[in-house]
Image 1 (cartoon, helix red, strand yellow):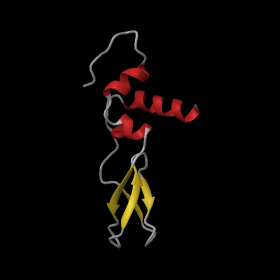
Image 2 (cartoon, helix red, strand yellow; image 1 turned 90 degrees about the vertical axis):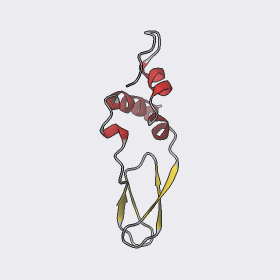
Image 3 (tube, helix red, strand yellow; image 1 turned 180 degrees about the vertical axis):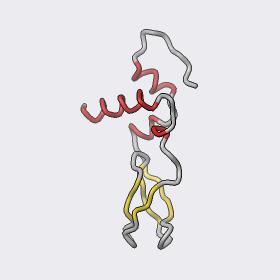
Length: 87
């Protein structure tokens, strides 16, 4: 559970200081997974759900769900991400 902070902080600063998954969504990083069809290493960024294997063209996705799919604060994070995209 994210601890409540003082009322003077915005939702944006609360989430930045407490949500461990938000950093990967705002500052994506590459990760590497193995293609289940051909065994090639496939680069997928932390803000992507699915990519195409450059070797065999299979659509490869993560086995893990994004925290945006299960976290009780996901709607607040989505608002922050959308605000950043518009900036």
